[in-house]
Length: 141
Image (cartoon, rainbow, N blue to C red; front, top):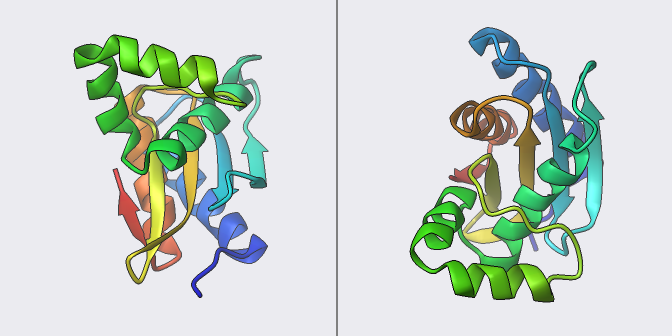
């Protein structure tokens, strides 16, 4: 059964932050969750906004909760706002319906998700995808 290790998560974060430096991003906050939506690893560059940790976790949790990319969830929020509002209301933790996360897939199975907050949603998403690629897994963005 495929899984995500702490070492994988730390390498993913390192690569995501490196991509952020390459793109000239503002300080990033990166959260890696396992398939059960449990926080596995987390880093926050300073100075980063107070709400960034919850936003990063919420982007990753949203992707895991619905099994689709955070970009797709953002599209759903625009076209089906009542559905997304209902999911947010029933979610046991943060659920942020905007781009900036990637599902982490290994051999067709979702093993976790990474959420990033700090720059534009597009840049957050690009950094998430780069991090997943660095650990040899497929990123669903």
